[in-house]
Length: 416
Image 1: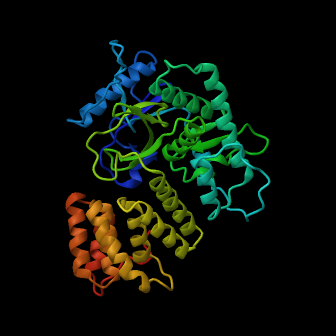
Image 2: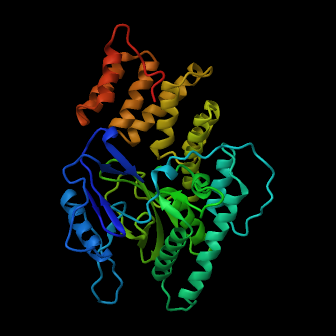
Image 3: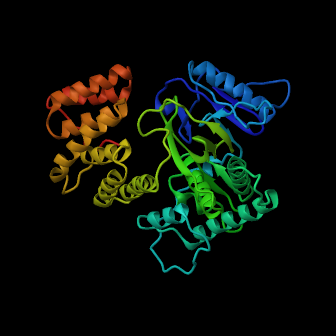
């Protein structure tokens, strides 16, 4: 289901094959559902009406999910907060911009020294080791921070009565406004910071950039750090099963303020997220996230050993998160490289840890493919059958099962 107005879009979907869906920062948009066309109303929806209607539909689709409200302490009624990951605000990027591939150019010497520092610049440095990020991206990051600082100083003068919550909301709002005015628009996936900060427009055109939930959240974290209002990255799985990132401030008294850069609004996080989900990441855990992203860049360029090394280091920095375990195991299970057999024992150990952390069809499929590569097709069949019980009719899993049962049996080598 898709509800649009002139600023917001709510995306809800029923389970469908991936080919029938379009992804906006982890939210699956069902392109063939009976309500896939925009709903028509007598006039344009205001943001408030859209938010209220979104909350109504989210609650209907997710019975039993608590939806928090903004407790300001003033005694005045506050509108309910949107569930994190449920809304996306304009601007939305054109597909032509989103699908334009950023070229990995040969590294050159740096001629620009950033005025600021923070996780966003660290992310650019990390990415540059796999796909060189030009100086212009660092300059654009500086320009974002400086623009937010100037506008925030004009909006909120330093005063003892300005609460942490008020300052955090202002930083989130102003950062979103600055990004939109500079030409940043939502497109998923925007893989890494360099992909966000290198323009998709031609030199003679007004700059156009793409961004998504994690890249824009990393920008917000960098802005907040530069302004002395440190925050944390948070990751959750949405009802669709896809991942979503947002930013969290600790505002005192055990309370938090969560900000969704996709919606450009404060949001309410689930209170029952399991394990690694819904937690405020430490600096080490955020570095783990960045390393797992760089591993994907290495794979794209064919450097499998560097990808595996990044995933191994990501595991060390955040041993409670399944992503790097899964990606390491999947690479060993499917890619052909000289050191593959030597890494099988390590991958099998990671596979067991993976399933203990996050046992869902996707991770079970990874473990099944690894078992098949190890020659244990009995275990591979049992695992895929388990995944199919949770996801019946999945064509990929059914094809996998047929391969494991064929004579001779086939493993997952070459699978995407």
